[in-house]
Length: 79
Image (cartoon, rainbow, N blue to C red; front, side):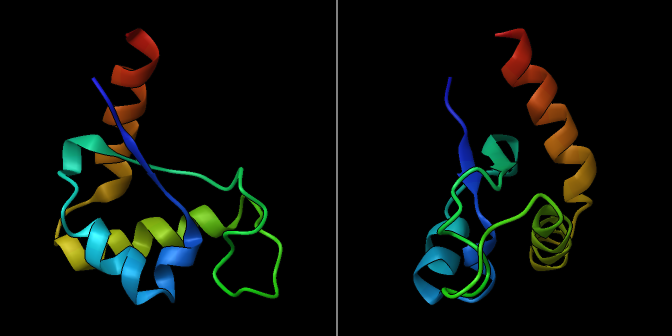
């Protein structure tokens, strides 16, 4: 299987937002490992940014993405 990791840059980048809509909930993960993909181009990515990303995804997808991502992580780690 495969998963897509969505960085905080998605919050402000329309291209990321268009792609994000194509990813099924069961394939979404979030991350902050890429320091250059913070919400704003002049910032460095930090783990705290995941909270804002998950909140955005939950509102946009109208589901609790925190719970969904937790399930996805468990599935990823058990593979």
